[in-house]
Amino acid sequence: MMPVRAQVVACGGYLPERVFTNDDLTRYVATSDHWIQQRTGIRERRIAAAGETTADMATRAARTTLDRAGFTASDLDLIVLATATPDETFPATATMVQARLGMTRGAAFDVHAVCTGFIYALSVADAFLKTGQARTALVIGAETFSRILDWTDRSTCVLFGDGAGAVLLQAAPLNEPATDRGVLSTHIYSDGRHHDALYVDGGPSRTQTVGCLRMEGKEVFRHAIHRMAEASDAALAANGKTAADLDWLVPHQANMRIIEGMARRLELSMDHVVATVDRHANTSAASIPLALFEAVEDGRIRPGHLVLLDGMGGGFTWGSALIRW
Ligand code: UT7
Image (cartoon, rainbow, N blue to C red; front, side, top):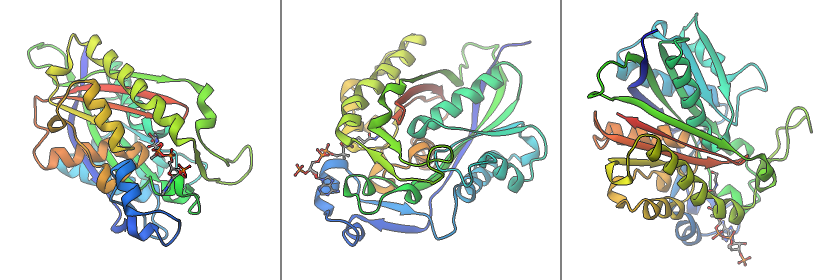
């Protein structure tokens, strides 16, 4: 088999219409716009409409991506959807998206790595393309965290939002080293000993309920930059690059202090960092593809740019992907 690389064809995204500002949150919990902005950089987030689900948002993001690429659902071999908030316990939300797009062949499945979910999904799709098991893959991150928040817990409910983003990958022959466009590497990691720092206190097997998100914010914060730095170092070393070679860092969007900490760690100016956390808050697996979509649409990320994706989340899970756009 001729060696191939997974090239990015297009990306897309979807945000629910309803904007929820920090001031809106003061109706639920004892908080303030000042505290939230100072500690997180978040100004507002989008919240899914009643009845609007992860599959609905994922399908909207998928359609935008296919439109931007000029592809149809019949061109797809694979959908890998990252989510921690599926519509149902089973079947996979990816299969719901598959049906709505009218894709009747290939495979569709979910992966679950919470806020690192998109990087995990990208890593899986990249491996399928490299081994010839698929030629065209849609990688989606989609979440409705508003449905698993404890709206009486100010330490968590102010931090998250809903949304979906997607990237279309296509296998291309790896015969010209001069054009190294595509996914250059992915690195994924987990350490399950940190369950108690970030988890949902429900589930089909343990409690037969959906449950609410619980987080030791300080503990997660303490690990975040360290883990994300480990993943970015691995990406750069594996490709013989340094941070100075990067055009863009697109990190998981949890907290502006973490994003700025990563930029400092890589000695990158914030002019090379895509940040959406102020308007999207933390959309978990959707945060990186939504940030990519925004930066591609407004012309910041352009063909040939070297883009580092980096994330960390519950599990703990963490990881990176280096892409020549
Ligand atoms: O996507 C997965 C990855 N997740 C993350 O990366 C999240 C990582 N953690 C964080 O971003 C931060 O730890 C938080 C934003 C969650 C919290 O910031 P912090 O600077 O670590 O604050 P803290 O938890 O130490 O709380 C400081 C104070 C406390 O009051 P006392 O005990 O000092 O009197 C909290 O009760 O702030 C209080 N507080 C709030 N006050 C107003 C906590 N939440 C709020 C709130 N509004 N929403």
